Image 1: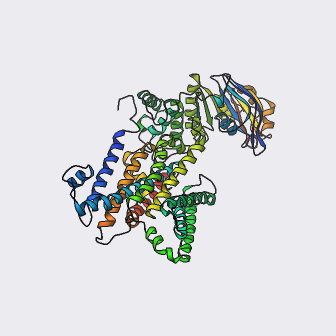
Image 2: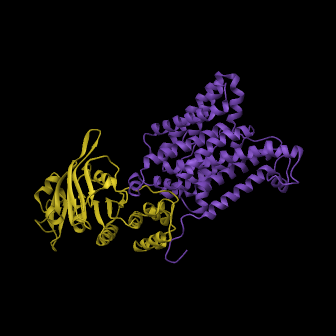
Image 3: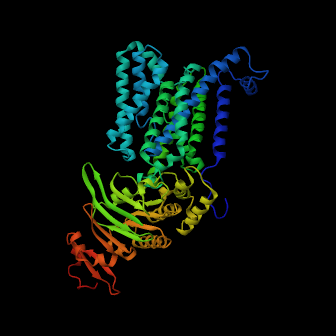
Amino acid sequence: MKKNQIDRVWRWQITASAAAALLIACLLGVGFGPVNLNFGSIIRTLLGLPNGLENEDRTLLLELRLPRVVLGALVGAALATSGAVYQSVFRNPLADPYLLGVASGAGLGATIAITNGGGDLHALLPIFAFLGGVLAVGATFLVAGRLFADPSTLLLAGIAVGSFATAFQTYLQQRNSAALRPVYSWILGELTVANWDVVKWAGFYIFIALFVLIRISKVLDALMLSDEEAYSLGVSPQKIRLIAVAAATLATATAVSASGLIGFVGIVVPHLVRGLTKRATNRSLLSIAFVGAAFLVIADLGARTLLSPAELPIGVITAFVGAPFFLFVLRARNRGSQ
Amino acid sequence: MINIENLIVRFDNTEVLQTINLDIPEGTWSCLVGPNGAGKTTLLRTMLGMQPYSGSIKYNGCEIAKNKSLNIAFVPQRPSIPAAMSVAEYVMLGRAKLDGWGKESAHSRNIVHEMLEATQLLGMQSQLVNTLSGGEMQRVLIARALVQEPEVMLLDEPTSALDLHHQIAVLNKVEEIKATGVTIISTMHDITLGAMYAERIIIMQSGRVLLDGESQSVIHSPELRSAFDDRISVHKLENGRPVIIAAKRATGLDQGVI
């Protein structure tokens, strides 16, 4: 820093470090499991070089582990980024796709799609999940009474809406016993169903949502201010807010429909990145996406290996880390407001 | 020069601003005074382009709503304070309109440094804004407004959350800003304080301009008391400065001088 200048608000090196962390996490994710694969061979196989993996190991890498790791990364990036965006848009550090009821609403939408079955389920799931998510976030804000309700009112409203959606979802499951198994396996929050088909459709929607969010990320900083302040800085906040919530809800809904209910990623990762970088700007969104992806890939690695050969639902791992972290954020926030 | 002509703002068919006409010369400080609900903040919001209106608000002959290059800084009464944002990062947001969002030129980082120094915040640039005191936050808001290099600065109750010491410090700073040619429009509840600093007082009531003129003449005008339903009393200090206080408290004081 020059003597008469303030430090840069954002540095590309931070984003590069987050990308490097994701690459390392992905390598660990494909390398470790009940059968460990050699990293050198993995890289050679992925790059199409000679002396790569062969036979079962090659199938294990390309058809089982790689789609699972890629799906985990997509879902982690989607949940972490939408969490960060909700926190900025609603000016609420505790906002999270799950706490706002978006995920439960998306879950209900997905259950309606599964129980009514038929057709191309994978293509329909995100659309139903998206509609469910949108309705849930709308209901949360309706119950809370206003857009910028205080954090506790908003969270209580989100919990109420989420509980209602979950109850309705359970009712649908019980009424459609034939669909019980697929719904349950999906609710558990797992990446075991990952294959290239799932990666393709989930990737399509998540890439669209993340592209939009990262494209508007710089202007999102204006939404952390009051509307008057945003206007004075040349931003009309309503339009940006609408685009941001729609894209974040699409990302969340796709993540939920692809991998079930995986909580806390949206609150742990943005706070972790902002805490480590000591920066609140939404220019961190790409880094948050990378770290969210890395976080879920590592959490899935834990889910696969901790009780090997059995598997833990990945939601258990994220909750183990996320719940204490959430309490830490809540406590820090209360201290700050005193 | 800011020319406001026949300005009308409606909320659900109710006229919250009713045919406002004002001419505000460049480089002056005008203070909007009036009871809650008089329309002061709505007038500021309209000038920011937030409210649809009929009539016109022109800056140097060009309609404000259409002039995207015009830089109007706003110092809010109740700012939204982002968690985990440092003072430097928060003040840097003020450069967004000039530089483009997400850009931070060396020139901008120089200006932010300079304004942090001017507002005595230089040692605090890494501190989080949600941990600041009311007085410190007000200085941060003024620093952010300053780095915008505005032609016009709007301040909504800039002293309402401050003790007297910080009120004076903030108002002195605004006076310095005005001296650089920036047009200042503020709302204030305290007419005495407003009249000490602003050369012009605009009294508003129920969406109308009731009184408008040079500060000293406005506070001595008989209409001032009626604007506040005779609940205020104007007194003179020994040095001749007027003091306006609530009528109930004024009862029993010596006539004219306190």
